[in-house]
Image (tube, rainbow, N blue to C red):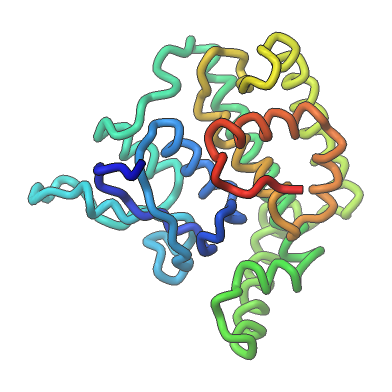
Length: 262
């Protein structure tokens, strides 16, 4: 049934083909919207038009009023988008009832994914699997120009990773660090799954409801499993059945209209 509520537009860098986009941050936002039953549209967009020069970003003009304090209609960065929608009471505060220790665990998991795993995946995509990533991320740019833009992006990513530190590691070292993350997640999620009702969703911190960490974790798992731009990571994640099952159960409940990854 179509909703009569106004719909924001999520620009995720890829068109709506009945499936997930490649960005973990866009899927993170989609999970938050769907969990809150907040209607939205999906569009491709591009980093060039994003307010922070990256995707995802959202057009919130449908929620704007004549009040100048409502903020800009286009907003970038998934964390700030969620904070804005929390402040305007359009999304529920998933972490409202967490203890201080639970909040720390939630923040630590998000930081692990967004400040560590993100750069391991960036290296694999833009350095180790460059041509597939280029043609996926820059699909909307005509081919001759795509070559030039791709080289610029590659140069920027190489510099970023060198400064951040991941670019100074060997491929074997990066895979070892990434394996440690997924192995630890597998161990924790195995414990959560054992206590969950069969086929029902379960959450990373073990509560009855998701936290912000679940939105982020689901986004990162999907960004690996639903794309071909990080093939080594995809093989790795598939070796951890509880990680895959965690994502599949969320998919079945919140994204039944999207094609399941293989």
